[in-house]
Length: 312
Image 1 (cartoon, rainbow, N blue to C red):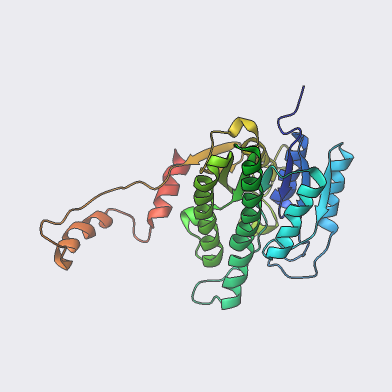
Image 2 (image 1 turned 60 degrees about the horizontal axis):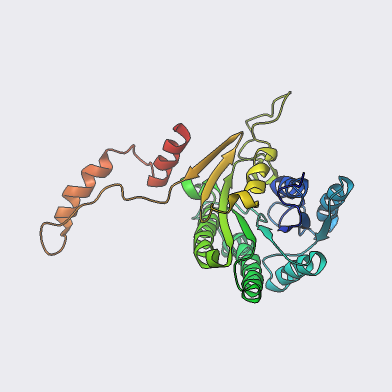
């Protein structure tokens, strides 16, 4: 019996630890040959010396289980290094079929205290890193499609966050980057559909090095699988990378602890029409102030929607 991803090749960025590691292992378990990318810096803020160790260890783990894997140590936010990553997959495995973008860093600070470097570095790694690999993989699939005279196989799975959906007071850089990734994903989904390629994004909730502060007060259970284990996220990535998900495109999915939620695109909640040629201040005050007065003080639109999602 063949495996769902047998004969396919994948690149997983930020795969030396945490979510990326479990995603790379899952793709390999489902039959894909995997290029494990990780810059290998020890600090979750991107600090420290780059190391091949984390990527090599995961690649070795895949090979020990009977799979095919290579390690790549490189900064995906650097276009040339991202190009080398995609080229490695194509040269070693003949083609690239699956791209999972997961690499990221954190440099948290309130917006009034954040430095320019703290903003730029997080946007660079998350958003530009996603763009670089997506740009190069898209060019590869477009070229293959033209040569084949029709659609080819291509899957992109990007990593957003509930910090984008609900806001995160101390992470304006991270939340902005994750929101940008959703925009990149939906645009890419529309642009590449005719070539046979899908692009989707996930908002995972998992206990990793990146979220150690968020879940500091929630201890893992002494027995059984931790509800916040990255292993709850990896199966969805495997599914989205598979032929079974051919009709799933441009979607955003929240995943954690045995739950997957499909997030709707924004809908118009209410509409107000001016009774004259143009709105006046007084008319807007009379219409909008009572509408927003019904919300709890300080609650944002995004926060209200995510609370509804969780309750549903």
